[in-house]
Amino acid sequence: MQHLVFVYGTLRSGESNHYLLEHSQCLGHYTTPAIYSLYDLGPYPAVIEGRDAIVGEVYLVDQRTLEQLDRLEDIPVTYRREQIETPFGLAWIYLYQDSSQLDVLIASGDWCQKV
Image 1 (spheres, rainbow, N blue to C red):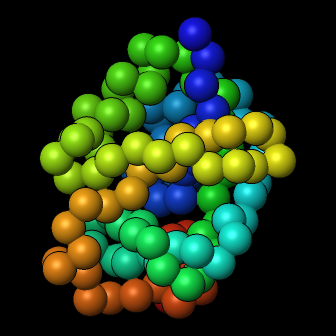
Image 2 (image 1 turned 90 degrees about the horizontal axis):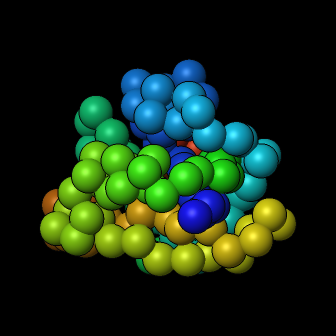
């Protein structure tokens, strides 16, 4: 079974966990509508519902890869998965569960340009 996944942080091309997607097809870049907020947690980001657009990439992944991503994201404890509409079809996005720990907003919505 194939799935679409929208990635916005360490899974993006050139980032530390991108190796998990090395056998997956990148369908393209996508910026969400302004309905989320991106936060810097140090080694990785967190997205919650908010008022900003989030920059990322959409990948076509198999079931095994999706399960690896779920383990990385600590589903359902740290993150939860929801589907969002993209130009490539419905894709999973990982949303952070504990918004009380978020304080460093990345206003640009782009983890790779967080300077």
